[in-house]
Image (cartoon, rainbow, N blue to C red; front, side, top):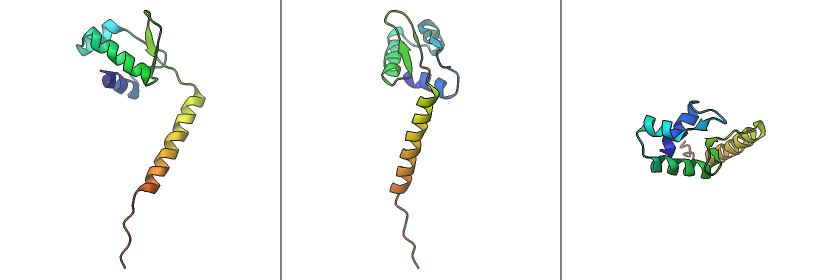
Length: 92
């Protein structure tokens, strides 16, 4: 369930600060209330949503600096991974 909502985020179907309505998700994804709440908990732990107890859950809004920092970390990890790949030695 959390993965399905995460996919919606990646494809721009869920926008920053958008409220996630339990009943709408239950109906649309044919899920139980318990499953949706567990998904919200997982998304909260991942930092993708924010919630107020007994109130609402909404998509998290990232600042420009946070996005830039995330991309900087990603670039560093990708470069490191590329350097760690073993390149076959040339045979002459």
